[in-house]
Image (cartoon, rainbow, N blue to C red; front, side):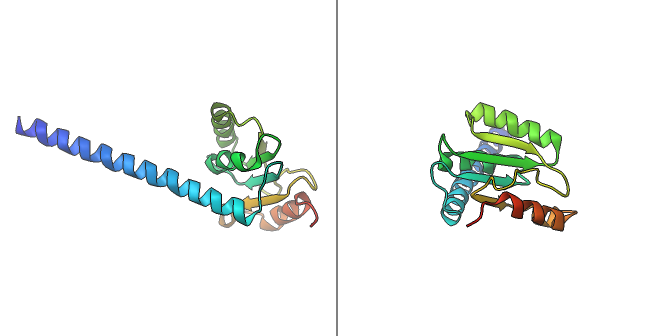
Length: 143
């Protein structure tokens, strides 16, 4: 009896910590996207790229800032991660999120397609940063 109660208390404590951590992570992503949208001056109709999007959670969170007439390009070089991004975007109803399979040396973004571009925790992973830099420069709209 004592072990069962202890186990139930431990399980309850673990669940409580998981709920608090999930809320903190969600809150952190929300604060981060608010800050990012402010810095990038995103508004409805903006076109933005998340380069090296990983799981795509930030791409999906940014969709609300560009509205239904904006576009969020979510680039990733890992086809499996890109499939996950597609699935998450579909489940979230993010119809204006465009997944793009990039390359190690090229984002595969079209020339002059973006009002803003961001990279989050990815630049240090780049094996061809000069090629990516050229690609970013071509993709960003003048001004």
